[in-house]
Length: 158
Figure 1 (tube, one colour):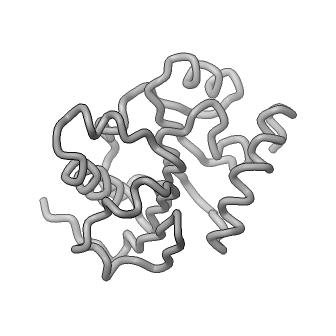
Figure 2 (cartoon, one colour):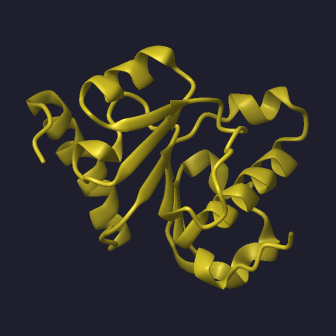
Figure 3 (cartoon, helix red, strand yellow):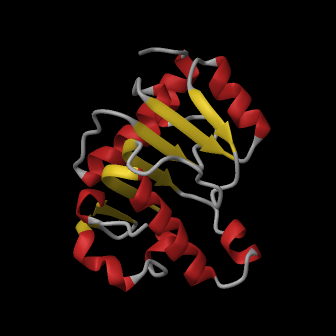
């Protein structure tokens, strides 16, 4: 899976440590939202990156990592289309620009839960206090700066 040495090194230093801290292994399809230039696609095969930077998306595609260019508020993926939906340190600016930060984060989580078959993983200190309390029953694991939701227990109404 060594797509490139720089990518591999960055992925090892960053993503593997995140996943180790959360005590989770990923296997299967992954949607990596706000992935930046070093998506989980650097260490896993079945990853689709999602970012709003044309340069980052181009960089991912050059490495052979599937990626879409779109804002994090535009998650136009079919329901239950990825086993895991993951975001590490997403920007808050898109939510602030649209008005109510708390309702923006709730809508983001709603969409992530709709898209994920198994788990939604969010790692972001700033988002932790903004997560909606109505989904606490879906929390499988929570730390100071991350939360893992059981998407398989979430029933999205049509």
